[in-house]
Amino acid sequence: MNTAQMLVKCLEQEGVKVVFGIPGEENLEVVEALSASEIRFITTRHEQGAAFMADVYGRLTGRAGVCLATLGPGATNLITGVADANSDGAPLVAITGQVSTERMHITGHQYLDLGKIFEPVTKRTKMIMQPDTVCEVVRLAFKYAQSDKMGATHIDLPVDIAGMEVPKGEQPLTKREPPVEYADLESIAAAAKLLSQARNPVMLVGADAARAGISKAVTEIAHILRIPVVNTMMAKGVIPCNDPYSMWTIGIPQRDYQDLIIRDADLLLAVGYDIVELAPSRLNPNKDKAIIHLNTVPAHVNRFYPPAAEVVGDMGDALRRLAQFCKRETEPEEAIAIRERMTKEHEETSADDSFPLKPQRILMEARRALSAGDILISDVGAHKMWIARHYNCYEPNSCIISNGFATMGIAVPGALAARLVRPDKKVLAVTGDGGFMMNMQELETAKREHLPFVTLIFGDSAYGLIAWKQQDRYGHTNYTSFSNPDYAMMAESMGCKGYRVRSAEQLQSALADAFAQDVPAVIDCPVDYSENMRLEKRLAGLA
Image 1 (tube, rainbow, N blue to C red):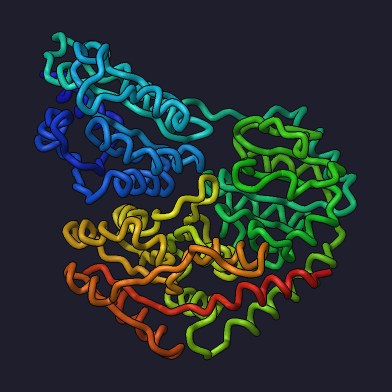
Image 2: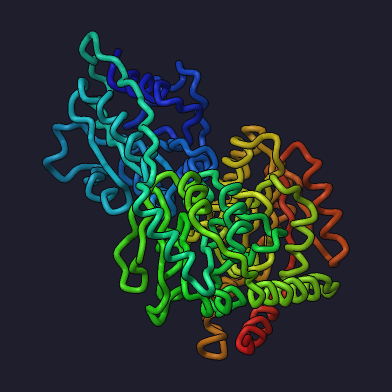
């Protein structure tokens, strides 16, 4: 058995079911070994797409998604998706081919020191230098990718090592689940004391809460302590949007209703929050709030986020024990009043029949087309701000937003991975026309792999978010406009189904028909982003 075959055997031992990637000359041994394995190999149209697929696969399963590329440009094409996974806390293992070991000391064709390149965007990067080390390197990669805080790791395999025989008797290392660690009683007591004394506490839930499956515990403590809950973009649905204590999402650049709720808080109970999601200066600008950090890992160091108490351990258990120590009977009347204002505004702005469609109307139709557990994958752009604000969620991980690294181009490949993981759910990729063109080629991959999903394009022929920022800062836009192909025709040419929305009433029927197809579908929906500046003006008047 050669090194590449043993690597694949190790992947099987780790429970890997699928690998995303592109064959290349220096990873041929690995590709050949995969062809003899039960692991499904999905050939993508770009390595960035493969990395994004592995990224979203990891987010939804909690197990490392795996992507494969050859050396040089193949490896560097993985970087954006790998960095996104590492920043956003998604477990991912990237495997790259490499030149032979005897060529590494000289300048050579397509040679790059990939360890140095991947080091800043991964938790660990290792080269397999000897056949007898492959089992250790693979186990190390998965251990770190899947341990708190989860993220990306990298394995580099030189082409000569890949073909060498592994010594007899070598076997994949056994994966052992680490024991669950629980918060100590002293830290819970300290947090309970702070909570009991707080006049106006607010809970902030973050991405780690969504991954940990603690939705029930979060909702229960919110009701027991009568505490309003604000979620980050990556924690939508941890507490259902229709719960009376759910104050929806914070994260758009402008000060919003959630900022008013947090502004008046004297204590912030941060559950599963990572500072990469949202700057702590937004939450505690005057450094006057008591902060309880509750997570499986200690808090990062930040002068706007100095925890008065840190509760580190299993979050669900910690919340349940914290609720036993506390008692609060005062309803958060001001937060509830703000929630009523939010709800009224959202209902009023979502019913507009004008064309091109307002972002709020598009998202109302998207919400109507999807059930509670269906999945929306958001690309990055102006539409992401509106999704954060107007697409409410009932379950965690039903809205996937890249907001740590905030990467354009994730929606289409991410939707493919979501459909693979959750074949029983509808999957909707929502993207701008800018982000769509970055990885639209993966529609062919989805068609070939029989993984249908719907892509909804907010079409404005511009990089809408940057145009919004330019308009806000300078009063005009520069260099953000472009032209688009006929997306519906392009989808049809790929064997997919294409739609062009020409009135507000058409969107609902287009979504229904698109989800009924057994091939990927693309809906081109013109959007009226003049609403961006109207929102800016409306939020400027918040009090």
